[in-house]
Image (cartoon, rainbow, N blue to C red; front, side, top):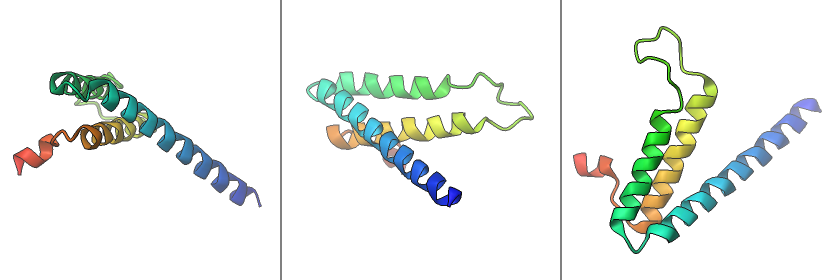
Length: 96
């Protein structure tokens, strides 16, 4: 029974994170959609936030904490949504 309760909490948490990610992405997209330069600046800010989450040196023998990896995923998700809502090309697509 306890396992089922934990699963429901995870699902609810996942749903709330998804809603928060979408709301933030929509807010960024709506506030920057008339200016490609503003959209680029917002996407750069998301990249900066991601880069500065963990100040562990790159050559550290320790793995990144789980919360840092989760935050990276969330910021990547927000950036993807902003690009989709503002029809901004993904930089990875340009490289291919």
